[in-house]
Image 1 (cartoon, rainbow, N blue to C red):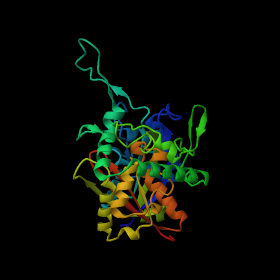
Image 2: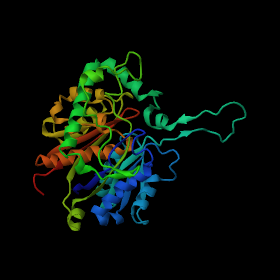
Image 3: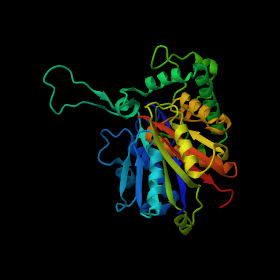
Image 4: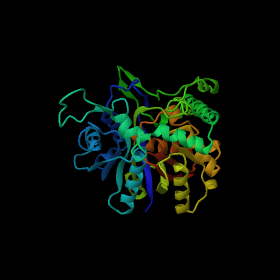
Length: 388
């Protein structure tokens, strides 16, 4: 059973508390699904909707169902909301692929979304507060940016691992500058716009990613103070940007794509999930890449392009060092340091960027991969044939 990525689209990724601040997570998801249905109307009667949302506090029952129905998906289509932190958007694709291989269905809406700006503060007042002030929890930190196993922020955890692996501040700043430069060039050349449907907010249309900084320099990055620890090397400039956004697509059997008369974006060749042996992030993409290559009997040299999520610059640096992947093959249109990382909205964005770039280059194989909170990783290997 051959499974394909039939179509995909994303919103621009807005800066934290930026132009999309008044647009809810569910609204962002619905904007992308609605555009997807415009392109592929048959998806209104998909076999299922599988969408990722990491920060779900206060979002109501099964937010993916709400997103789908408000966008125009038929009420008879079941929906499920996934959450294994940053991996969830990619996990929606592998989950849909399994369902198709098992012949449970032929076409699924996948992807994810989050509004980090709109993550609420919560308090447990069920037992009341007899005296004193109530304590509130920031769900953005608690549910999105805090390792529940090691009980520390992902930034502190990553700063520690940077020291252990000997990854320097200079290396991180150099990589971060490269990401910004690549993203700005891709924006100027219209490569990112191929993925994007605009969002209306504050009486204007946001048509491009808000976090790209064209004037970024290594010298400027070097002036930024560490964010997490006094002697740390992670700054606001060499880590992913907190963002608001959605990326949504369709996964289908190739037979169904042909039946409906659509040319797919790519074939899904394999996928892999890994965890451990610790809760750090750095080498999880490398481990996931190794596993998917082993499953498909391929090598790093067989892969033309990689999208490795830039949760932190050091994650990409560490994974590339381990597998000896040249930067020329990695995140060639920039990554989350420049574009942004709206948690559930990132996984499918990586695949979407990857398949569009492979298509521009005349086809080839690529891997999209992420690390995730709790010390996990996922990877999906795709191929864009030179001709369909």
